[in-house]
Image 1 (cartoon, rainbow, N blue to C red):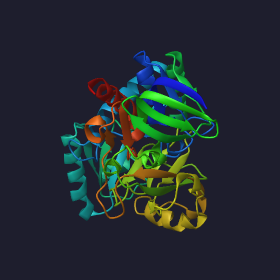
Image 2 (cartoon, rainbow, N blue to C red; image 1 turned 135 degrees about the vertical axis):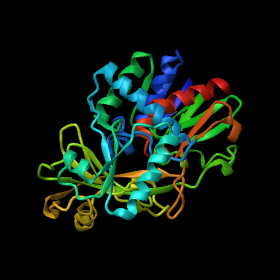
Image 3 (cartoon, helix red, strand yellow; image 1 turned 30 degrees about the horizontal axis):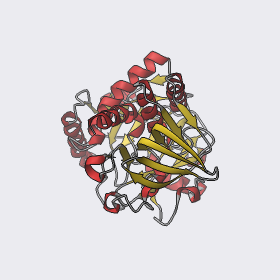
Image 4 (cartoon, rainbow, N blue to C red; image 1 turned 180 degrees about the horizontal axis):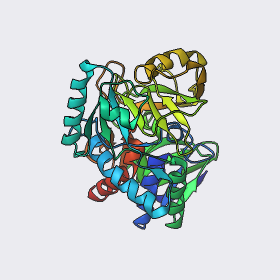
Length: 375
């Protein structure tokens, strides 16, 4: 069996894995980025809303709050430096009736606690001037929320990574077979080869928890229970009258069926939240979108846009979120797990990196580099 050794191994070439690999390579480390798909960003990173989040909703002091706010600033700067298409279009978080106005006040207080102090409250008259087709009684306007071309962003991260000397290895699935003082050892499935890394960053997304399940030398109590939530999106076959992103007051399990607009100007509605059986593995996820959901989407959308036409809602795409909390549980935080927790030198596990993972990606990478240096 062929044997390889590498200084740093990053598992998973989604947006976070790419950002981490780029940051490590920029520091001069020898880095391999391993991806089981034939291209980068083929799973969660290409199946989301492409929103640059402001950092509004997350609990004060959480990794999600801190890394989203910092990551947003880093991401906008990186887009400017590299001519990555984006638009700081802003979003409206809307209250359908007076009972939800209290929710908006709580959301604004949470945002301020997180360092997001640019939200403004709009009454019905002000909303009508911005978005005449909305039928709501109040809204919070977030001017720092935006959208970007996430594929162009990932391609630039990969280009930087390779320019700094990193090696991307695609079409390669890993099986962890050992962790010891000499490094972390993986089998390259189907290639009759092994690779040993001095440090490893597990950014495998949907497979991140499973990656170390079979290792007797890894403490099982440090592996969270993985839960999966599928979110479906519908596009709109006609032009919508909106120029801002429109979000309802958040619902359990997600941010509700909201309206986003991509860089091509196409309106998308979603996602909903459908909890999947834990017996699923990622290779078996059904990413098809049930057209029968259109009526439920239309009902949700009509609460803030009465003019929605159900017949113009077109089943589009779906994504699966890797969560560390289950149904009817409070949303979990990002988990960035280092040797202080699991005892394996040089190993960083990234668990539960769901939204706002895209926005936070460069800040997560900075945090990972910092922890590896301190280990």
